Image 1 (tube, rainbow, N blue to C red):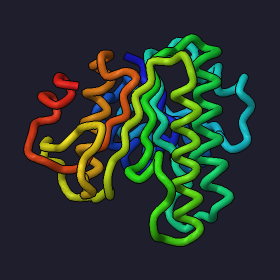
Image 2 (cartoon, one colour; image 1 turned 90 degrees about the vertical axis):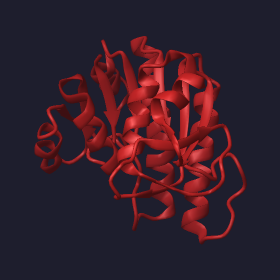
Image 3 (tube, helix red, strand yellow; image 1 turned 135 degrees about the vertical axis):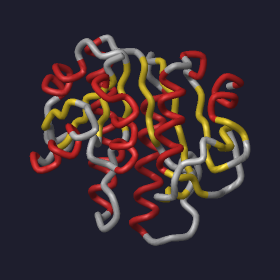
Image 4 (spheres, rainbow, N blue to C red; image 1 turned 180 degrees about the vertical axis):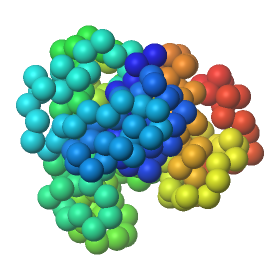
Length: 212
């Protein structure tokens, strides 16, 4: 499969690319990040999703089997970039997928999305609102979308054991396991049109995805 990964230099995205190898194409906005993506065995394409026109992104997506939205403004960014990256870039990628006829779309969102923000400051509220609006946009489209809401992300080694369901208790999950779940979702078209929350658990990923 040829899988386009938006936010290709992110920690989850690089782990996903390592699993997909030559089947992955990571979109990065900084040329300095190309080598890191290529070191996974994936292809890197330079494109700033905050500035790109839909025609440019459509050319990148053409011929893909699926797209994964793994981009995020990241720690230290303000409320404005939560909107331009976490919402608007997802909308742009979905527009491009529709134009290119690529139906499978996996969006990495966040636990807490879909509800009014709780706690935190205005930047956290802007992040949750952006993720919620990105989800709402995607759900309204005629695409085979799956929305994945992981809990607090860690750099602990993956275990392959998780809880994956439309609703799970708050918790954390290694980025390794998030990447593994995305691979499993890409291979499970029956999970389309589902919103799934993800934290560490006691059940093998393959068993849970097969059940969904």
